[in-house]
Image 1: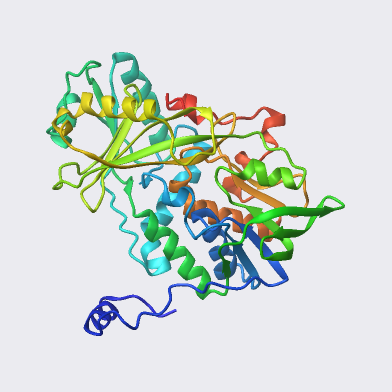
Image 2 (image 1 turned 45 degrees about the vertical axis):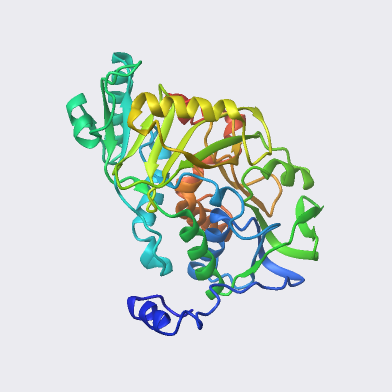
Length: 414
């Protein structure tokens, strides 16, 4: 892999950008691999990279039914944070945030990680009490958190309407949180994985999973049969469908989570903003667009478009907080398909099928978990036992009753 650098960019520009090598190999599938990962999004590619780079697994393939990054990895709002309530969640997402902080150097690509902070608003005295509890738990977990008054929020957000329909009483901020460029993260992991010897096979849909004696023996694909030593499902939105091919039923449902962007404007929002009560979150991208999200759709769906009511609710909520944006035009809208577990926490690790692993149930938090998800799942597959950070997120928790309900803890429905 030719390293990217300031000198290589200058040399490429002087040559008219005619001689850049391919970022990754578009491989032809082989008949057998030690590990096959289904899904060439962030989690699948990160898992493949850590398997090949740090665990020495040589024969690894990543299968993608469409093109690389065409699922949720290209359909999110790019937020990276670790301000979770429970110690188990906080430790996992803090590990991911720390990996994000060094990811550009790790995979030699500028992922445009901007630690501008994520500010959570409180719209009632009751919510202020909840946020003090939440911020205190984050602090006890060893993660940065700071409570803010109305005056503090005005300094961060000069344009905000503090006396909106649900007046703002304060909030808290995680200053190390921020956003990154989702395409760069996916492409960077693909490039680094390919350089480490991973076969990335695009336009290769899995149509069947063959099992024998509680083991997966091979996959039926649109490009032929592929056998594997072990298999990981990293397919946001479709994990239940694929697991069913192997006779495994997962406790998840799939719903659409919408996002939208406005036309670009000059820099005006240098912090990520979230409101659980009004239920909207917004940040400004490097291109000047305001990236907006809200609640998940209320019905199960595999559609990557969502519905009009959620768009309307998100826009109404945004204009309650920032009426200065009322004349901006919405340029694009899309939806990702989210796997939701009953406790809105991920399911990552071994299954009842001996050599089948899953990375699912990420809900709305899959993007921020990409580095840690790949790192810990790779460790789990190599050692055939859960990584310490993954022990609370095993499938068996639904039989023991040890759930981690972050949705309830943070006061957000999804």
